[in-house]
Amino acid sequence: MNILIHKRGLLLYLAVLAASLVFASFYGGPVSFGWLYAILLLIPVSIVYIFVNSTFLRIYQEVEVHKLTKGEEHGFRASFENEGIFPIHRMRIYVYDDRCDLYEITNGQEISLNIREKKELLSGISCRFAGAYYVGIEKVAFDDPFHIFTYERDVPYSFRAVVSPQITDIANKALDLENIFNSTGFKSQKLFENIPGSDLRPYQKGDSMSAINWKVSARLSDLVVRVPDRMEKRAVTILMIASDVPERDQDTEFLKKRDSFLEFVVSAAWHFGQQNVPVRIIYPSGKVTEALVDSYDSFREFYSIIADSIFYRSESDYAEIHKLADDKRSDDLYDNDTWILVRENTQPGQDDFCACG
Image (cartoon, rainbow, N blue to C red; front, side, top):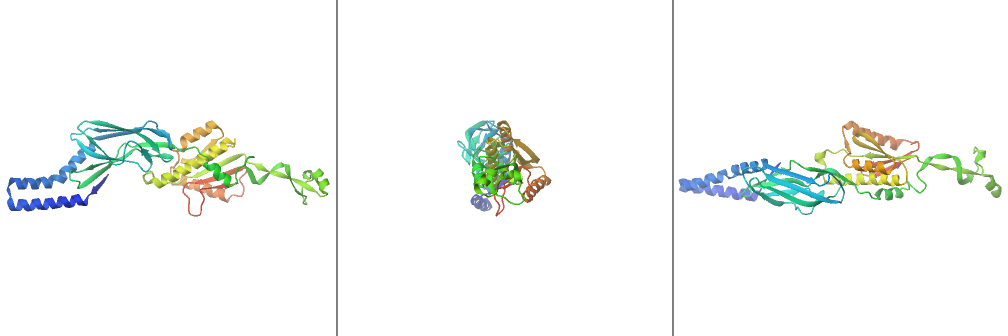
C-alpha cells in the first residue's frame, strides 16, 4: 500500500478551500456554507469511497501454464470484478514490466467497472529471466476526483511463474576457454594411468624397467621410457554457490544474476551429459541437496525443478555451501573428481566459475 500526494492538486484544493472560507465569512447563508462543507468533506469522502472500492475489488490472474521457459510466449488472463456498492472509475493497473512482457496490456492502463461488473483482459506474456518470481499485474491505483492524492494497492493475488532457463552452449564456450574439456574426456593434472602410454621421455634413475621402450631406445641409442597418460576423470561435480536474498528484496538486478546463474549450470549439465560424463550437482534447496545427471531422463528431471529450487532454509545452510566451496578451493587432491564452482554473486576480482582438479 502506498499513498502519493500531488502537490499541484493539493495547492489547488487549499486555494479553493481558502476562497470558500472567505466567501462564507463575508456572505454567510446556506449556499456559501453548503459549498464550504462540501469542500471540507471532499477528502474524507474520497478516502471512504476509494477504501470501499479497494476492499470489494476482486482480481484474479493466471498464465495458461505454471512452468514456462524463458522467452516463450504464453496466454495471460486477468479478471477484475467489482463486488462493492459504488462504481469504480478510471482505476489504473501497473504490471511487472521489468521482468515480463505483456503484449496487449500497457503499464498504467485504465479500467472502469460498474456495480457488480466483471471484466477480463487477455494478453500474450513472455518472461525475460529464468527463476521463480511474480509476473503479470503488480498493483492498481485509485485517484480522488480532484487528483489530490493517489492510493496504490498491491494485487492480493499475484501469479508466481516458474521460468526455466533456455538450454544454450554458454558453458561450452566458457569451459573451452579454460581448456577443461576435450575430445578424450577430463584429464587429471595429478593422477596418471597405471599402464604407460605412447608419450616418451629420456630414462631417469628410478624409472621402472617395464616402462622402457626398447625398440625406440635401440634406434636412438639412448634409453627412453613411456609416460603414463593422465587419468580420465570418473565424474564432474558442480557446486552452485547461490546468493541468499529475501524474496521481498529480489529486484531486477537479482533476477538478471539468477538468470545467468541458472543458464550456466543447466548448460554445463547438458554439455557433460551429452559426452556421457556423470555430473553431480550440489545446490541449496532449503538444505544442501545433490542431484546426479547421468542420462537424458535425469537431466530433464533436474531441469524441471532447478528454476524454483534455489533457496536457503537457514544461515547454517548458507554457511555450509560456502564452507564446501572454501574447502575445495584449498584441497590439493580431488580423488578422481573435477569440481566446478559456480558463483551467483561475484565479488571484485572473482570469476563466475572456477575449476578444481
